[in-house]
Image 1 (tube, rainbow, N blue to C red):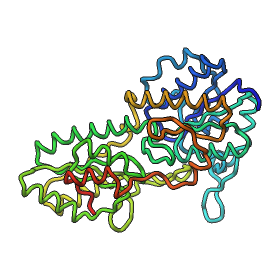
Image 2: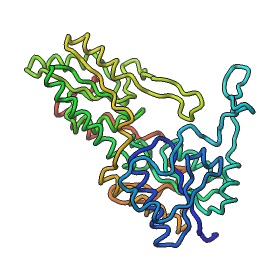
Image 3: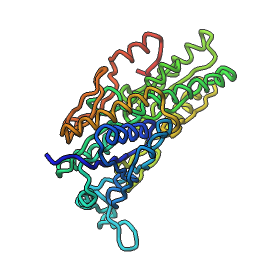
Image 4: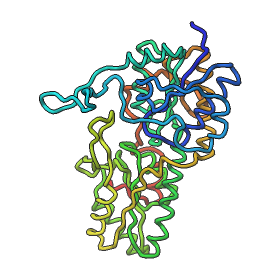
Length: 373
């Protein structure tokens, strides 16, 4: 195997707390322990397509452990294996049915890596970003994957970095609307991120003492949620807290879609279910209801101590995996140990979802939390 002398780090997909601590850990371990040259790819796969590399030194990463986001920037629109074609005027090219046309431009990215002398590429991302990581690995690129998503829905790892910070922010949001709900005797509905996995809402809902938790894995009957709220009121509780996942489904199985972004690799943007649930509960219970969407504040800000430590562990383990030739693999937390798994096994699997009959759901139900089922 060719000796590893020069590596590059790429952050792709949605930003989250913990990206900078991983960049720091990879860079410091690579330079301090192994004397490697380290480069960053700016703007995710978009930057890889355009050969946008910057050199990283110890001085560039020393103080970034407390910073949210990513110093390398990111993009969640660029799948280089299915890239939308544009004409000379920068307009999208469409077929006879008006749909976008695509092309595979991954060879351009591979050439940029070769021209820059990059021996291994570290890709920090979730399911979509690591799908491309697997595909680049199939093309012969020496890839190391590091699992990132606030949704915690990536297969073959117990926790992704960014999740702990995000649920702490969501819990704080629930705590803050509680005082308003108590003061005005209102139903306070809080919409929480997570796409089609309910991990964030379930964890924050339990930590924030929600009366009802609505997640995608358990289709809800709004009548049952309303009955729970009316029963609590009859027992003297004058307010209610409802935690709703952005991907929550009613009994008809439909999710509320905020918008569709045509040129994005993940085109569906969920959102709006919180306002819908609040409106329905107000009509069914006769109590005033308010909806709050936490949105992107869950992605931002200073990473928690837990995420800083987990990110540092992932970064270190990724460099060690690289130096022993474990390419085409992803570092993974299973139990209390960092191991590694094949990207081929991670990608193509179902996302990791909440078990409706699992321990956390049972804990919540035993304490009287309504899931609408």
